[in-house]
Length: 119
Image 1 (cartoon, one colour):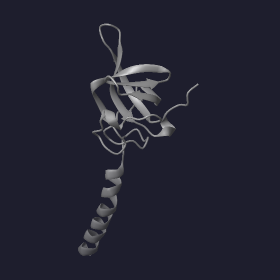
Image 2: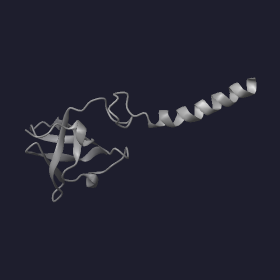
Image 3: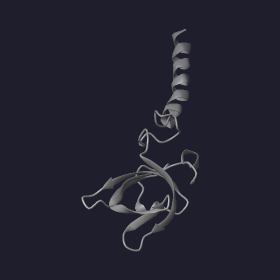
Image 4: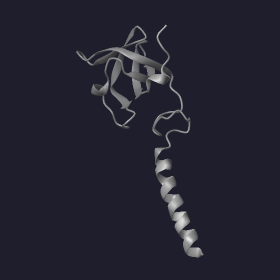
């Protein structure tokens, strides 16, 4: 009898572990666990300019991206600025420096369903 209970427990454990590993953030939005619960801004990248540093056009506004900005992708916690492209949906945080210039410090790739359409 103990043997069958042990076997049942092992089977259940084997079935639950992959489900726990795939369980994304506690927000229930299907995002990786390394994503925050919410984002201060969400938008689609309208254009990327990599000529002098990196800047993004989002919601009709050009924003500079900090050279040390953290980029997280749906498939990888460690992305980089060269992963960013036109049409990509992102969540992002902006910091304002002493001169009042807004700079993107954190970027997270988002699924299209999480970003509201442009007005």
